[in-house]
Amino acid sequence: MTRRKLVAGNWKMNGLKRNLGEVRAIAAAAARCPSVDVALCVPFTLIADAAAAAPDLVIGGQDCHAEDSGPHTGCIAAPMLVEAGARTVIVGHSERRADQFETSQDAWAKAAAAHRHGLNVILCCGETEAEHDAGRAERVVQAQIEKSVPDDAAPDWFTLSYEPRWAIGTGRTPSVESIAAMHAIARAKLKQLVGAEAARGIRILYGGSMTGKNAASILAAPDVDGGLIGGASLTAEKFVPIIEAAVEVSK
Ligand code: PGA
Image (tube, rainbow, N blue to C red; front, side, top):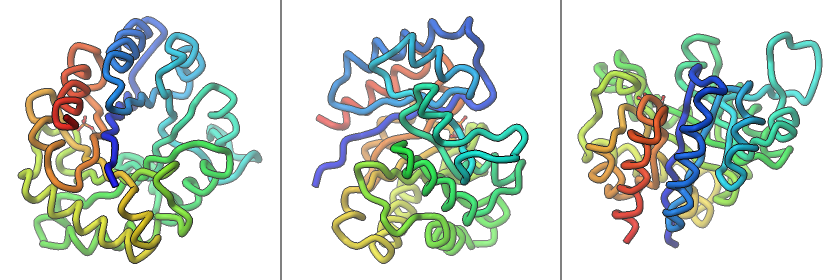
């Protein structure tokens, strides 16, 4: 089974209406690259405007609540994302695990809620620097996957993203070999959880300081089916070379 590459941007807490020109430019580049999938996860406040500015680009949110509505001040529910024009959502990002104390169980419930409402899901996992240094990365990632991936995860709506926390926003990346090794471990764990066929089709992205310079080598590695890109997704100038690298390695 060939897995199409997915290049997903995560704008995190960046982006105002004045940045919609970047959304349009990224959408134009995505339209020129039909052999790969492109998505852009923007702040909640920008979803409707981004979806209107770039109707053919997959716009996403960066989190959603596990419940559909209720007394949860400041939270956003999956149906709200859908109504705003989102088609995908990131859950379990390491910044939310660290800053909002989210657990793998939370990510599981959020992924299930998103799926209930027809959103695609990008679920993140990844070890901290301390866990990496202690040689525990493999076990940590396996446990996160075990606790957070829904049993019915399937390629048509579910994507996993491996993001070593120490590589996010730091300019440091693991070697291509160790990225490939962790992706193989993640896929083996997926196989146990969702079965061989689904595990073969589910895309596993790499995230953490991916740029136009390192994208081609990372994206060409076995079991790496795309990237989740933070800093380098904020402008078309930096993001488009990553999309183009995905096109090149897909040939
Ligand atoms: P980065 O972020 O590309 O800025 O390292 C990646 C991510 O957190 O998704």
